[in-house]
Image (cartoon, rainbow, N blue to C red; front, side):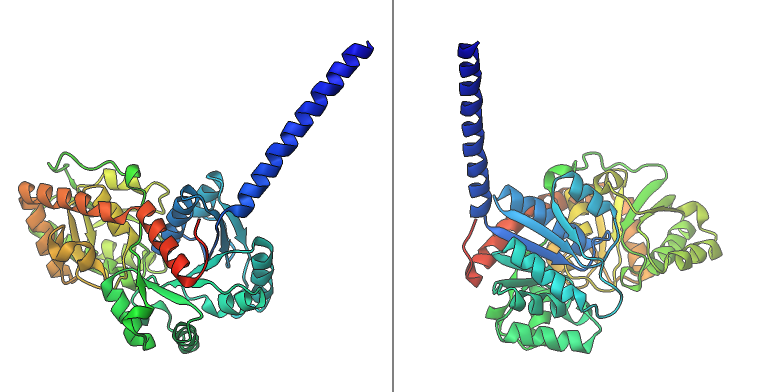
Length: 395
């Protein structure tokens, strides 16, 4: 029995030492990883929010430790999906208006996580910069997700951003050449002070379209919030024109927003209930795009819309308003039909695509090829280069 006990004791000691060594290696490896803290206002479904989701996954693939901090409360499709994929999330539950407690909580998280860089999104620098100073974090990057003049209507936020950018506290990042110029103009910056990184998506999630014949009825897709920016009213009027011209088409609309009921009312007033389907939010954009024949995007203004890159990755023929960074994305019309965004222009472009299968195929294939420039891994590597230039070590 003594010999058996000695063997078991020896076996236990050997196992304990091996596990201890393994744990030490894991802890050491985690501490050696480059630490990125992504901070965003909310994780409702939208372009900036989806970009943060994609960036968090890609940075982890690049070997980084990533923490995503969300100021506002609320569980969403994105928070659920990110948790399932193992993303470390902290939701602060910010109160409406100026919530001074956010400064303290952000600073405490920064001290605990010890990030090599804090990368913020949407107009929240008034919280991020003071918290970073309190936590002695000096490497700050901020992505401007829209035209600079549209990012915020608050003069105070605009003045603070101008100060932070001009004194070098924060590196601003634009999504395209057009949005870069808007940042330079609004904040009075030199070209060398603004970086450019295109939004990225997971290209492998999108099955490119191969058959460009039309469904009956033709299915036209739009994904976006029901707000003035997205210009759903033009879609309603364009649908009326298509119907009057004898085209059999249904518009599949995905999204929610403050104008949703107003748009439903406009559809009913024009007798177009059979031409519109309102699907609400979707947690499966590739599936929604895969059911479509065309994608239409008549926005009033844009930075570099994520959903447009997703439609390109799906190989869809696209009609898009030539605003903001959209023409850059679509190579000035080489990968889609660009229009003015009004109902007549949208209807005319859609009718042209519905009438020409060869054009649908050539534009869809060109869009898919162009989408290769918008991969999430390329985006992550570009941001890591910016983080490094700001003065922090790389992964």
